[in-house]
Length: 163
Image (cartoon, rainbow, N blue to C red; front, top):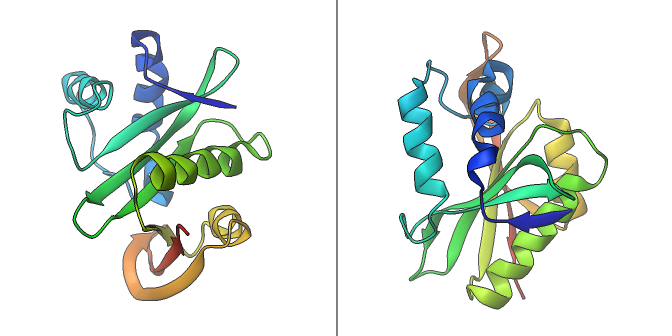
């Protein structure tokens, strides 16, 4: 697994991830139809680091195969914290853990961040397991915070200090 910048050839794979209703639902993405132009605008924005100072995105690859992306969102440069997000098109065991570990290293050593947090819907057991395995602690819950499969579900806030 390697992290890299995005390539134009990644666009169709990113578009497929953005158009997956089931995936967007579990990762708390936007659940409305996206036009090709809107996806292209977003892709161009994430492909140019520095375009949005509060967000950084990396492509996740295995050799040359695009597996998804990982991002730091809501980067608060003053208080040195950010939210992590990961979207993969692959269920290859360990890829998510490796990608998150790589981002934690970058967040601490290159960006000087102090704390990383994640918001995970309660039904997303694999993500909760991955973050707890990486020593994220549950800091709180937002009960009945999101509609998921027609029912209200809890949003779990997990965090890790980068020491």
